[in-house]
Image (cartoon, rainbow, N blue to C red; front, side):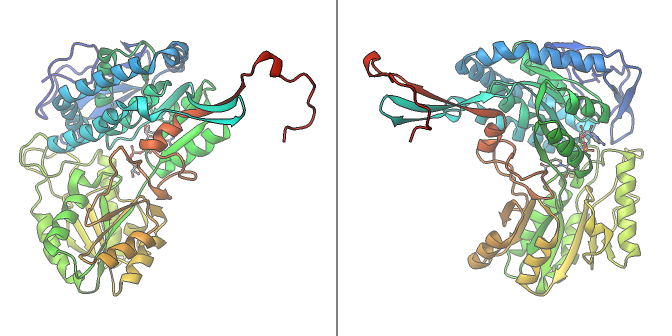
Length: 520
Ligand code: NAD
């Protein structure tokens, strides 16, 4: 088995099993189109979540290394900005092609480091690839405006890049979320410093290699590693003009506040508690299958995981059947063909999830299906929690107020449609919400009344494709939500307007006198 966090451009092989890696290679930074070994004395052990075997060591990069990356991006900016839009577009075309070609290799990295199943890891890559594909249309997406404001006078607007921008990524989508930034930040003319999650940077390193192969000049895409110390460096370095953050509320609210205080533009997508209301007129089979997939897929470690059910009226009687379907899902190493869900990212995460299940028990909820204490026979040492269904949950319980981020479905029940709407809206998060119903008027009511930013009607995980933007709301984003990721808002985030007003008139018609009053 080859280690796959890229250290050179010559990694051809990739793992297809969770076997112990014999020669563990440290993960490098990627600066000036080179994989550069770190001189740090602080290393973060990255372990396969299915086995807890060491996969690689990730550096807490030194300040000198971080500065070198920022300098690389700053030096590259003037030339990159002046590169024609068609040349940039060609590089994105090539990158799109290379990502598709390397789909299995990227997915294998994700399965090994993050734990999700190989099939699901390919979906992770695909959703990032779609952002790249959309960016190929940049030549028609980045146009400005022009109007003749007076005789011989016109005002036109241009969308200019910001300069050096940074992205800080979470662990749960190691390919998709770096690809929310890389194509859009660069195709708009910025140069980028990207910090992947220190828990699974392998996919980002492969993407870095592909960026070089696609033809990005030195310094346009740089990757640096580390945890909070690297983040503080990014927030404080004056050369960095904007930060794209995706991750928890704890980190994101801090980055947003401190980044904005330094005058940086910050987009920040945060935590979630996504609800689905199930109505008695729903197609039961569709609803139960969709819910089981969306609650337990990726072991519940998706920001759009469907983690909370609101059963309206008699649908609470459907819960035992839902638990049966959940019980039928197989937990296993992500490379195993029968795996429906893999392990949690870390032993700490497993403990946190188990503690939350225990808290529900202590507070009087019912554990209808208990996933604690399970593990696949072949992988006794992984961070396993099986599908868990908790019923009779009340809004004050800790399992309801906290984001669990594990394969745990929390179920509440109400008598009426309006109570379901009120309950969902009372929750401070607003990433996504779904409703299962066959009634058009009921669907329309939910669509209008729900405050969540992304609504699914009979669709459990309504993540918009990249011709739209990711539109979380309330506590699921920091700030005003004006700076959404990808789509039109994403392009807006990475560009600033410049307006130019010009007067071209025959010499003899030019002003001959001084005008001291504002023109009216
Ligand atoms: P995290 O906040 O722990 O880590 C995200 C990034 O922030 C990492 O790169 C990490 O190094 C850095 N970081 C962590 N703690 C920090 C601190 N104290 N100071 C500065 N930087 C810090 O998040 P995670 O556990 O990797 O990801 C899971 C979370 O991300 C969940 O809450 C999930 O809902 C959220 N998420 C949201 C979206 C979305 O679009 N809304 C998408 C994916 C994940």
